[in-house]
Length: 257
Image: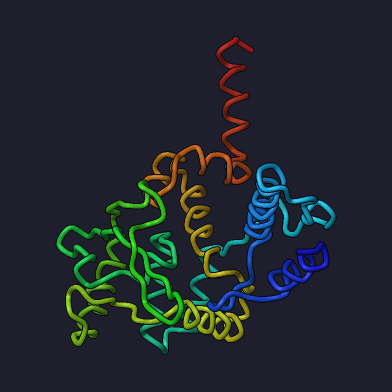
């Protein structure tokens, strides 16, 4: 394997998109690049490989995440109105925005996961399409397994939707589509509403930013979205500007100034 082969491999990844229509994240590309480099370093050290070809080419991707995008409540409401003519899309995006679940978690949901009597949603699995087959697995992390409260309006909406989908058994997928459907509906809704285009995953960021603006703590938000509190604190620190001023004011008051 020559350096030129590494470059061609990099180009095949950076110039392509995933099956769901989204491009590979720069941070993900950097992780892949580093893993390949580690494999060749191992071969050079233990299996007499003369030179690591990855060393001679530029790294692909980036170690820094791209700019975070999100919708305000008003932007989302404009978007949801534009797609309300398709119930399957409308209710799917309602769950994504108002519950902050991951896309794979949404697509794995069954009617029995909606605990309507207690207004709760149970998250204990994730869906993805691999090699043309539907695959349902455990969630991304241990923290991802959770039961979260639904706002009253969403609870009513989902009861209505589940009644509409009386052809779906309690243990069957309620949202029986792949991510490609969501990408298509996102494009359609943004074009019709004039709202800026964001990624499907950015709806999760939108939910977190909404909760921050409402004054909830990092711990409260982390438990809801299935993250560690420290991850919320660091990743969304720029959305907590008021807290910085409050800390400084409290310290001044404590000292008596």
